[in-house]
Image 1 (tube, helix red, strand yellow):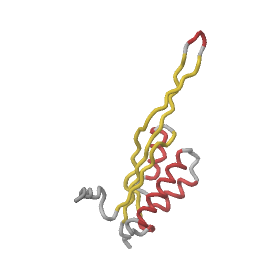
Image 2: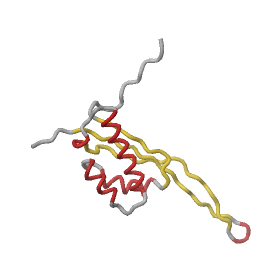
Image 3: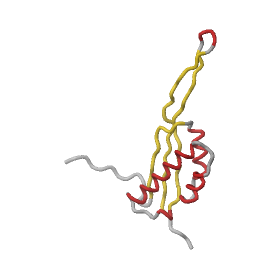
Image 4: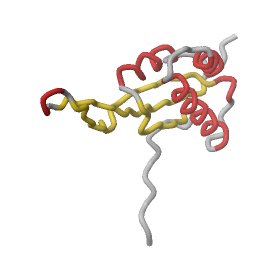
Length: 126
């Protein structure tokens, strides 16, 4: 009895991590994600460590989680991992207001976003 397990969405040489409810707009998060797409993991971690953008901290945490998933859950070699996907999407938007003159209000939008990072193990060509 019981429910059948769902098939794996990724290939056998891939691992994934998702960061949800990251404070900041998807547009700003995507600027950081663009810098690491297609890079080797070691180089991407170095770039994120020295990036001056606030979103780089969150992206680095998700990337480290994807690397840990690849190593521990899927037995992949960490040194040969490459970032194949770094997709950014919208999450909820907190709406606040600021009181203005003559009883009016101005809205303040505080967006949240999500990021999905997929790493793949590639063979080294010598």
